[in-house]
Image (cartoon, rainbow, N blue to C red; front, side):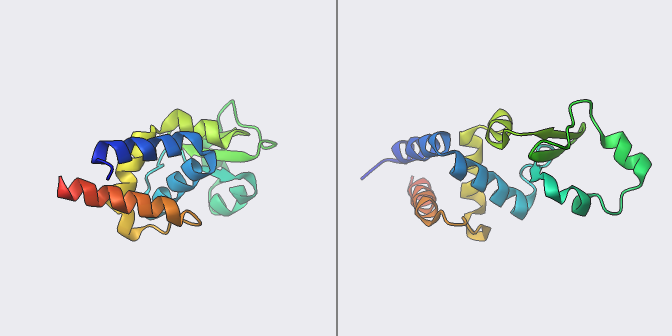
Length: 133
């Protein structure tokens, strides 16, 4: 049987090595509790939906020099709007895997873990080990 630390380290490694899982878990947490507030990225096609009721002057205030509407993703940050083509690197620049795992453990009962049921089972097991310790 694995110890809490062994299992925790295994899950952190999984988050480090699986970019799709890493992004999915950040976006799952953000959808539930705003975890990625200040660095959440959206696919560029959503720009009109997110800012449909924004005054032009307010929208222009959000624009940042690095924004490029030809990028794949837009980011609504605390410093204004930005864009990127590298969603994975953007999230990795803003979240440590251990921080993500801690938040997943706290919110596990309210998250869906879209297509990552095996990872959810491991997080649940880690929670059990943590409770038993």
